Length: 46
Image 1 (cartoon, helix red, strand yellow):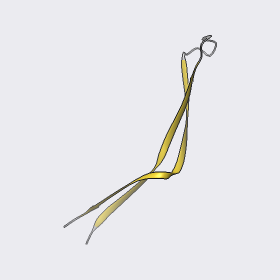
Image 2 (cartoon, helix red, strand yellow):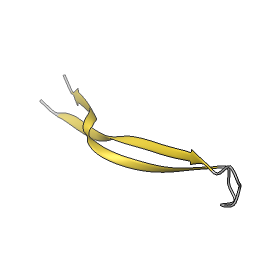
Image 3 (tube, helix red, strand yellow):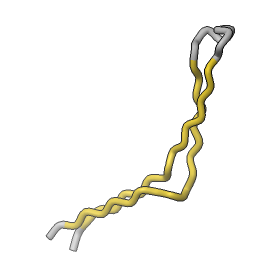
Image 4 (tube, one colour):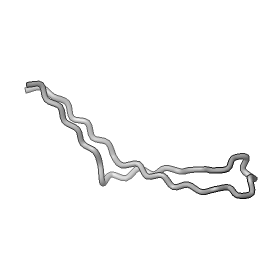
């Protein structure tokens, strides 16, 4: 049986407002990847 398995870690975002506008934009984010929880998808020919 042939198939494919795709596993992707979770990605969390944290953001904050730049209330003074000193950075040239009103909002900025940073992202973090964590191993758990994760998404796993399997598809098999059959």
